[in-house]
Image (cartoon, rainbow, N blue to C red):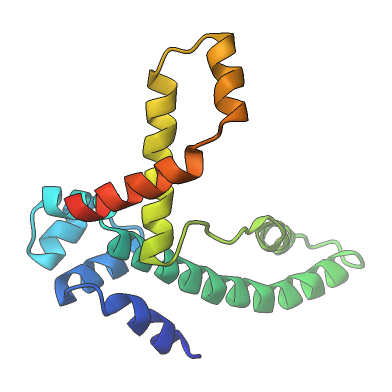
Length: 169
């Protein structure tokens, strides 16, 4: 499956404006910049970023694609950086050494972006966060906590929350 196929799977649930906005968000643009470029309000973009599972999934998917491309470019540079380090070990001019070391550190430190990449997975994550918030807001005694741990209805509550979020949609 190609990147275009993967991207099309998710963008099918988005308008053209949302797909374009998702691209800009994934590139690091802030809500105001995205809104201006897309001809939308900042509040609309903010709403999509926080409340639209399809939009959030698309942004996460694009970020992963961009990260993969960047990682490959850095990997190619690391070959050059190792060559510079190799030469620097035998020669006194050290001008390129800091750049070579910085490149190798960047390659070692890169982590893939995280976040769900399907609308259903985003919706489940949102539902889990809401259930967690409800739990945190409910005062509980130690006995309540033990009882809740033994009679865990969390999966049912998450499923119900997902349905409620779909309806609110």
